[in-house]
Image 1 (tube, rainbow, N blue to C red):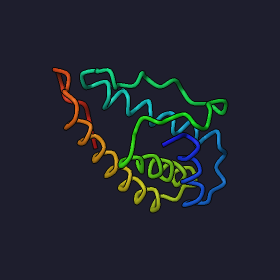
Image 2 (cartoon, one colour):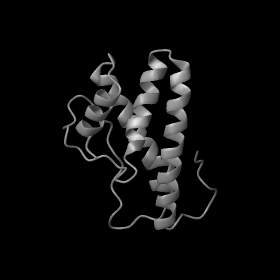
Image 3 (cartoon, one colour):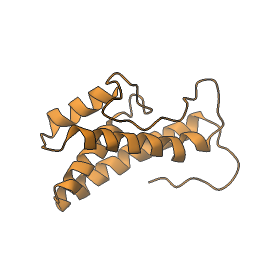
Length: 126
């Protein structure tokens, strides 16, 4: 999934008034979290992407995000969760959080099955 597709998807499925810069910032936080909590806790190989630089409004829309199909819905649910929180819609936030936590857990478990974990304490996962 690209940065632009993540932003387009959430805007189509959850119309909102949140500025694009905020949504880019949230996607950036999520990719940094994916790298720190999941990818970097496993042995690196030739296919391991480098740590992502923070995304800004100048980041090209075709920038590939870290989480690939079939788990890319993690971006949608994370953005929906952040939008709900920003709008102080706590019931919707709780629902979006549950969807995000499920998507995050599925991705984390799949990544763990396919990559050798580094020795040491286990990383925290939902």
